[in-house]
Image (cartoon, rainbow, N blue to C red; front, side, top):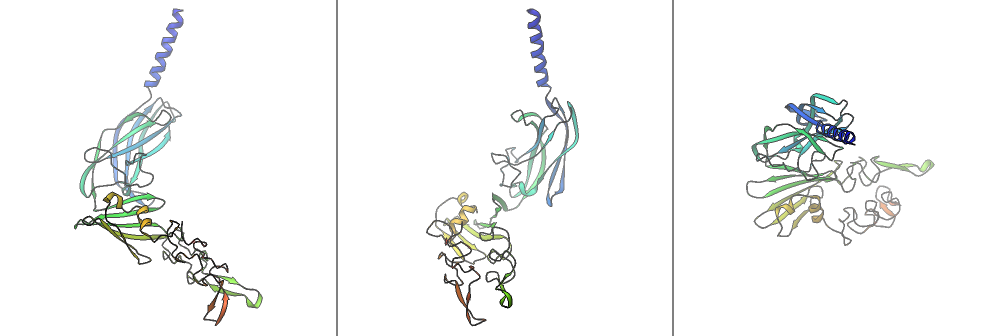
Length: 337
């Protein structure tokens, strides 16, 4: 009985030693500040470290970034380089091939766009961690603090998902200018005309009466006429702290909008929700269709399915709505989703 207890104690002690052996030790960390990856400029963090007791298991090598007070650096929303709590980080995963593995140059890249640097020159920090992904994100080891100098501008870029981002500038007079870029609400970023699908027109008729009709929406160039083929809508706004009002302008329609007084700057930082709220709205609560202006009817034939063509001095079938009489942009809703 005593012998079995002794074996049990030895087994338990061995398991504890095995668990304790699952560690990571850093030898050195260095950085390349002029790196380029997938066309993005940024910094590549290199690490030399060894890992024990993790054969066949997946680990994450993560660089966390901090401000001059060594507080976690808040993310500007740049996708792929932030934690769930909204702080800046960069990571890469790998599977450990041996019981005791050494990595002489393990690199992690982060684009400068993902670093939300304050205006002016400041000192920033980062620290590299090795985590056991299968062990509840247990930290196996970490490097010493590493510092670097970074210079931010008065213009900060924020990302809101779905391809929308904004450049926010603190002006010397106390106003805040925001330029918001979002995927075109008509072509959804595809850049081509929704009616002709970028073909510029279509063939119609039969036999000797077959003819090519230039697209009445894009005029034959195949580009979306609302974003001029850029795939993006651009909206500018200026927030005046004194009056707590925002004056905005849609650069493609040329229309100007003014939001009422009240509200804090954080509520007026150029988010997609703010831009949508300043657009003309349909009674159903959605943005007004810029093509039919809410009527739901084709603006070429006014819902009659035919229109007077001055080139041939006669009424012809409306190819814009494909003889349906409804607006092809909003499909008769009068609003865009």
